Image 1 (cartoon, rainbow, N blue to C red):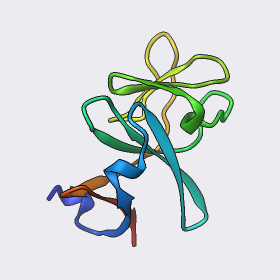
Image 2 (image 1 turned 120 degrees about the vertical axis):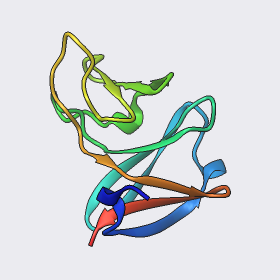
Image 3 (image 1 turned 180 degrees about the vertical axis):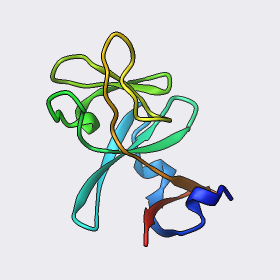
Image 4 (image 1 turned 45 degrees about the horizontal axis):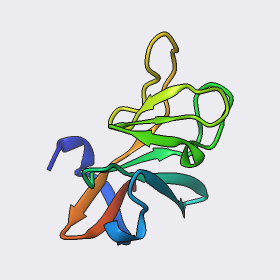
Length: 110
């Protein structure tokens, strides 16, 4: 396990199958909305559900490859790092994800 995640409190949120392929599910943990995304190849990523540009809900965006396009102004955000793709600039906070079989766990700071 990566040292940055060693202090995380892991929260099970359900199965990979609960997240639509090429879509997202919103999870509310500790008072914040987290968008949990599933790629075509069943990769699972989690981001704070807010675009760094105008706070559009990324969970309502279009997933393609390992990116999501914000529904408000078409900014493309990397699912793995939360960074806006050029020419745009900005970053959305990522949430650690761990899979145990088909179960999805999110890591939040303790």
